Length: 409
Ligand code: HEM
Image (cartoon, rainbow, N blue to C red; front, side):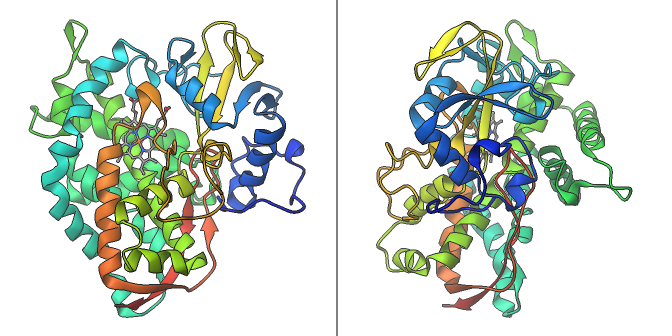
C-alpha cells in the first residue's frame, strides 16, 4: 500500500472507491479515501461487490470502542473483510476468532510465554539474525530489502515454535498466500488462486508436527498442554493456534521494516535524527508501526442493536475498523502525515486494542528494535535503487519489493 500525504485533488472519487478491493492497495491511495470518510462519515455503511454491506469505521475513538467491547462486537466470525458474510470454521477454536471466556484460555499462557520479560534473553540471538540478514547490504549492489525481510519473522518465531529451519522458507511463502491470495505472486502456473491449498498445506503441516511430537519446551509444546475450561486442548485447536501465531508474525513485521526504510528514503533527515541521538530506536519503531499500520483493519460483528459515533448499528452487521485510518486521525496525532521518529505521545493502534491486542507485540517490538539498532550501527544513509512494488491485499499494507543501496558508516 502506498503511504501518501493526502491533499489537493484526489486521484479517484473516494465514494466510488471499493476499499475491499485488494488490487486497489497495490497502486491506489487508501489514505486519501480514509481521510475523506474520517471527515465526512466516520461511521458509515459501505458495500462490497455483490451488494453485501459492512459498517466502516475510520476514527481512532470509534475503532477503540469497537475493539474494546467484545460483548457488543464479537470476533467469532473472523476478523478479515475477505471473509465477510461467512461463518468462520475457527470460531472459538483460534485465539483471534474467539471471545472470552474461550479466548482467555487460549491467550493467557501464550501471552505469558511471549512477554517482554520471558523474551529478554533472546535479544542477542535476534540481533545476530538481523546482522546476518543485513549482510548483503555491505556488498554495495542494489538489494531488495523488502523481499529479504520476509525471512526475518521465521528466524525468531520459527525458533520459538521449534520448527526446523529447512521448513522456514516454505512456511513464509504459504502465509503470504494466506493473507494476499489476490496478489500475482500468489497465483499458480494456470493463474488460479492458491488460497485453499495454502490453508490445507499449513494445517496439514501443523497437524503432522503436533501429532508427531511429545510436548517440548517451546510454543507448540505449550499449546499442546493448554487446558480449555476443564478439558485438555484438542488437536484441531492446537493446529489453529499454531497457524494464528505463525500468520500473525510472518505477514506483519517485514512490512514495518520495509515501510520504515522507505520513509527514511523519503525523509533522510529523520534517519539522521536517529543517528544523532535526537530520537531513540524505540520511538522510531513506534512511529514505524504507526506509519506502516501493516494490518489495515480488524473486523467484528455486532451482537445487538447499538449506536456507534451516533450511527445505528444493527445486530448481525459486520463492522470494519480501519487501523490505518485511526493511525492518521488528526484529533489524536499532531500532524499525522508527518513521519516523526521522535513522536510522543504515539497512541497508535497498529497492534489493535482491547482483548485481542496483539499477543506478539512484545516479540515484534524486540525484533524491530534489535533490527534497527543493527541498522544504525551499519548504515550512514539509504539510497533508492529501483521501483517499489506493493502487495495487492486489503488486509496487509505491504511492500513486496524495495531495492536499496546503502552508504555504510
Ligand atoms: C509488527 C508486527 C505485528 C503487527 C503490526 C501485528 C498486528 C496485530 C493486530 C492488529 C492484531 C489484532 C487483531 C484483531 O483485533 O482482530 C494482532 C493479533 C495477534 N497477533 Fe499480531 N502483529 C504483529 C506481530 C505478531 C507476532 C510477532 C506474533 C507471534 C509471535 C503475532 C501473533 C498474533 C496473535 C496470535 C494475535 C491474536 C491475539 C488475540 O486474538 O488475542 N503478531 N496482531
